[in-house]
Image 1 (cartoon, one colour):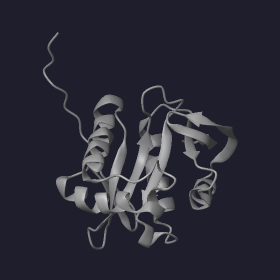
Image 2 (tube, rainbow, N blue to C red):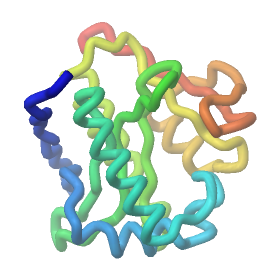
Image 3 (cartoon, rainbow, N blue to C red):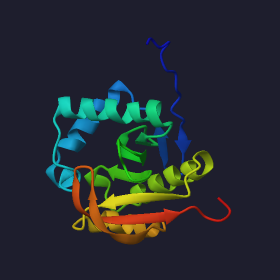
Image 4 (tube, rainbow, N blue to C red):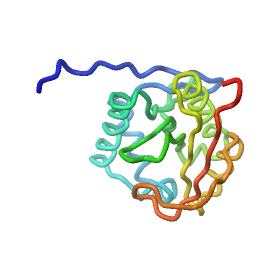
Length: 178
């Protein structure tokens, strides 16, 4: 079987302070620096080098082609500076579409993860037929748990999903008007 190729577009989402956009080659260096930071990555499966970051970015881009949604690169509107990633995720055999976020450590506590997560969720409700979203968070990641709560997620239990063992499982139901 041959295919003519797949064409897809990664939409751009803009918030007050952020632009959620398609990944580009210039994102590899700052994302590698973010992924090399042990504190940033202790709840995300450990650090990545440049090759690991490259594989992760191509995986995140591929999600858009295979699923029609995925993770965006996140930049500051004011400066164009790369600050992290956020979006919707559902790897092979994932239980549902997950809303996820990760912002550079020097910007923790600034509300950027909540802003990026809210934008991804709003895009998901406007675009996807899903009746709910999930979030999978390490029990030790208190900051991400706070973001999930601010976004309206509720704890549904504990479990393991993919490589993530003993995680807190969150759910956010589609609003009645969404």
